[in-house]
Image (cartoon, rainbow, N blue to C red; front, side, top):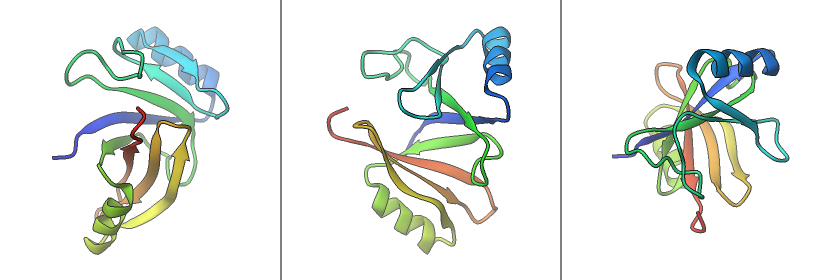
Length: 127
């Protein structure tokens, strides 16, 4: 089974969203270098940004866009290209094409048959 490994929460106002999640849940929010993206640390992580606690996940905050007006879960897959094909053959479609995120991994967003948008992530070998 492929596991949920990340979440993304879209915002209209970054400062307001950051304050809300820090004040309400105690999360550490920090800007990701060279991107309009803020990491939401919800649990202690190792040097590779992997949660130390089994089953725990961290996430991110980012500006709302047409493919992310609502929270998105991110599922880890061994091959992004293979899973995009699986999504499309099962009746879903790609709504955000594959992109590389630094040296960390590959990411895309897809829509399922119920119009839910989910993220799929492939960790690169050096992570």
